[in-house]
Image (cartoon, rainbow, N blue to C red):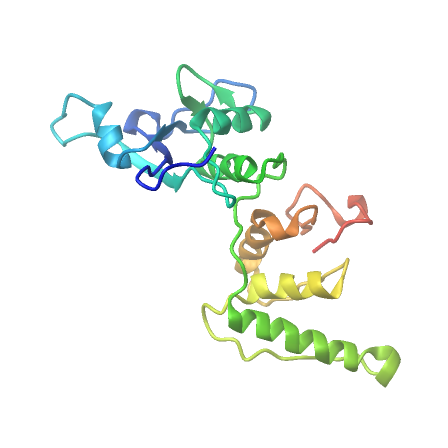
Length: 231
């Protein structure tokens, strides 16, 4: 099914103050209840229709997500498709379109629908490398292959003069993928960045099947799957 040019289908998600920290009652533990819907109108206009009475501070809700409900091939999908994907992710559905889940899980469900395949790892990012990141990966790959240990007898090193916001973590993972590395050791003097390394790896679709191990993760190195890349 292809949608007409004048129709702008959206999947939206919002919550209300009384639900923002509501404890989950299903099999999973967590907080926050979210409504996931579909509209061809402006999202705020559609949600306003569900709040006919204004409170003393206006209409109390927070829009968490607003995405076009269209796949790369131009086909349209509906909110019930996203609802099915959430159910497949073991998310508890309450009455109507309300779910015990996070906005990240809604994003992962939308990605599953767009790709027409399950998303058990709950990946949600699909962005590509920028040109400068692609150049960095290509130059480094070429250097490493030309100066491999078996050719030079020395371990090759390559330094990136990458400034803030370059995307060093994401680009490093892309290099590791390009080189076919299975075991990647990250050394840093700033332990606080560990969460960013984990988030970039576990959240992006390019790294399906990859594993992340640290002293704080449930998965430990001895228990990893040796056939899959591990950071």
